[in-house]
Length: 237
Ligand SMILES: *Cc1c(COP(=O)(O)O)cnc(C)c1O
Image (tube, rainbow, N blue to C red; front, side, top):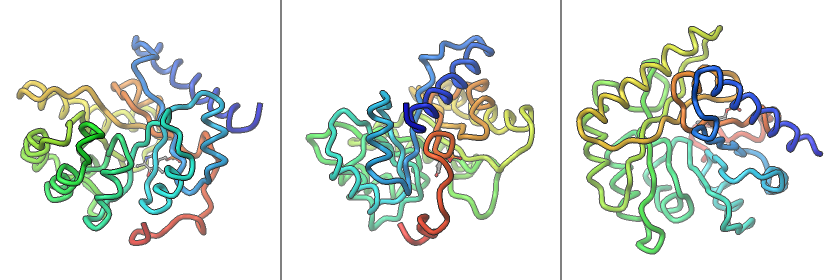
């Protein structure tokens, strides 16, 4: 097997072990292979190893990849920052968006989602560590945004996503994920039907699975380190 197939197998084993350790069904945790900055060859290698769901962060790069690969068996998830002039491409090429953090962006995605594609599954991104520089809605603003998104006709609100500040150690990593899970539970108690917690990456997926992640988003542990030169800057998507 190639390196990507081996890495995928190792990540699947980590997910399964973490699920079993917390009494969860490993099948309840989806693996999103984050292929941003990597080419179609890397996606195809993972696909050949049975991977179905892929995460992308940069709009132009991902649309080129999606249309070039043209594999209807792949489920594409947009997980990066989204500017309003890029929403149409995302609405037309992705099945999921994990990074909705404003009503304006959500409204554009709903308006621009082609009728034939069915509702776009979305998560609201929460700035769970309250970092000034990070994307995501504040906890205080979450309920109103979730209600607004849930009412949009071409969107289906699935749940919440977060990228916590890096933390050392299992217990420290769990804490923000536990808070995201409680925020999801509160919205459910309030009448929203949310089945998704998108949380956990290469370095903290075990902690996220322990707190109920239904998607873990894993890049480096599958595809290797991303070269800084290949990564568009904040405005470069
Ligand atoms: C890049 C990225 C990931 C993957 O991170 P790794 O540490 O490489 O696993 C996950 N989520 C988001 C939103 C990302 O942008």
